[in-house]
Image (cartoon, rainbow, N blue to C red):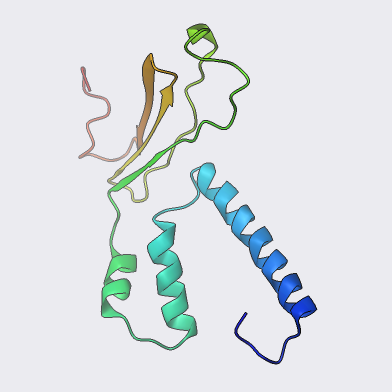
Length: 133
């Protein structure tokens, strides 16, 4: 938008394209395919612009053992308080590293919180198989 070589029509076209890319990535994140995307974008921008950021480099290199988010309520077609049997559990988030957890949650009206916790079966430290977890 700050490139003065582009006219208003070209800027609008680029803005629409950026919006489409953002929508695609937002949908990816809604299906559990995004991990801390805001700092990831800052990291990408730092690389594209040639800005050295040890903080962002450190951040990206971490084995994120906890990947969490809220699954949004994408529809209000059914009032979950009036019809609690129509509530859905929502999506999930994969563990971002082999010894971590993926946790998502959503509010089902005012009656429930649906929580999904996942880990790799091969992880020895997650104890997902333990009774009472």
